[in-house]
Image (tube, rainbow, N blue to C red; front, side, top):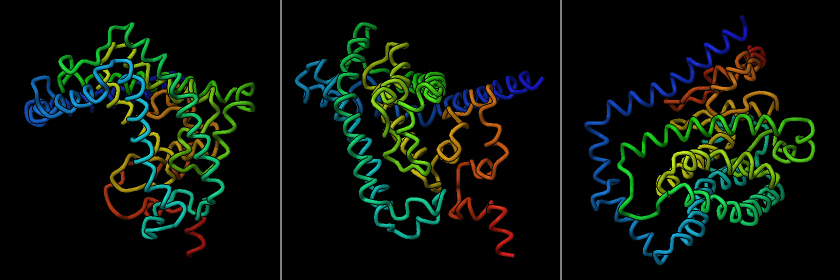
Length: 323
């Protein structure tokens, strides 16, 4: 009965994610997306022109664009997303943002030695591991018939639909590959590096053993474009969203108007909860039971105001002390 209830709850959660995305898609189709299509579309508008500029910049060389272009684009997205977070962690400024810290007594301020250790491993993963992986993925994309040509740029509507499918595919591959990393045989020698940070920071999202970086960080977001045979531009868009999403999940702060990082922060704190990022498969397999009974679960929502969630749902211990 418990398994059946979990299955029903998981299906409900999955349908909620898909349904919400589709409702927004349909509701916006004849208004917002019409305007966005004018920027994205395949009729010579903004996004088409920008992709043509990138294509020309790479000398109309598909391999150079697919490998070098993808690498540079990913580096820019990742480091620009993390630059402010690193400054905040090291300096503690602006101090007003420190109240959004999820684990307030950890990494405040962050040791520069710890930061450099993480930066060094991240750079190794992005270059010595990431570039060969990108070459392999590019070859597979071309084998699948994917295009890099500006004239083949998809419509905005189809790109949105692909992003929804990519997200669901990534959830499946990330959940099971991540859970595999927690097997005792692999955890000690591979995944333990990532869990050195019980209170994560943004760049820790790809601070991992090279084997884990390939299997859990790079492969899941690449599977959607490979399965659908998508245009490289759509793949870039999803890679950017995936990099920013995992940065937020690891940043250690529950900022207003950004997705809640409470679930993955709790994973780093407790190790055996919340292996996925959507939560659909965690509900199905019961790997979020302790999380759902915790104070962190009450705080796990999109913050639309400026009052920190830790003040809205204070720890019981904090309440007793204040009394």
